[in-house]
Image 1 (cartoon, helix red, strand yellow):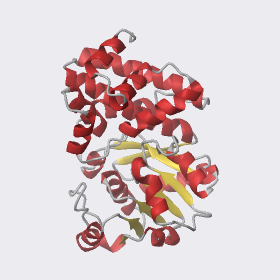
Image 2 (tube, rainbow, N blue to C red):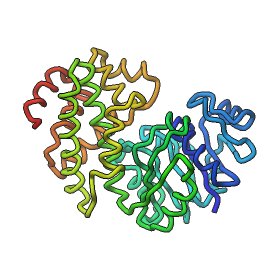
Image 3 (cartoon, rainbow, N blue to C red):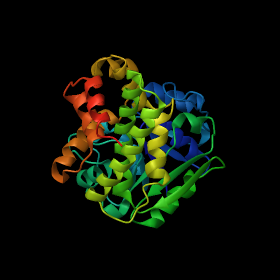
Length: 328
């Protein structure tokens, strides 16, 4: 089966690096012609993770998304959630019938208040048996440096998950499979929201002691929310859940922690996002989680505090002080 990537950011580039270890040909849609030309000529993404060197002879890079869709049986979608719907609609993409789709997006599609797996099902009619996700505590920057990392590939059809996991696995990437698509994908959204909270606390001057309690409570909050929205037997202490939360809340590579830190230090939300010039998925993720929770009414005070700070312009210092009274 032929595999392709849709997306041109740092995570897409890291996934391309993994796949190139194990496939003969990688089809790849990128947004800009300059990026496509640079990848085909030099094997480098000029905008993201320039240290990654890719084998040019394996790459088939194009700005024509339909061409990649037509050429591939398996598509890994790595378009930021904020632009996912418009990326497909503007290009009037067709021919998704029979494709196996894997989302590597850790956000919510705001137009639908939906995780990417549900969006792909609604947008293209792809059966859930053919939809999976790539998740886990794995920053693109460390993939570039070939640091030992762990991923989870989740799909209801385990043979699909196993097929992709074999093509992602390298000497520095270890991959496990799961069937918990909805839980793992929601956890990937939540951990970004909680990383923003950790960043805000850091920016306000709170120390490691408080932030450790904040993250510990966030893990319990995640457990409650996942149980309410999609109750199955899962171990939230596993790497796709707690592991991803920890790395996103504490890592220097975390965009969401960085966004929170800037807000805690006094940046407005708008100015922080503009200065970062990179997508922090927790911004739209907090909206999606808030909207979804209108249906389930789970006690998620940390996520709700982040929502109020980001979208209702509430004071970070006041919200975090009020939140501190609810933690234990």
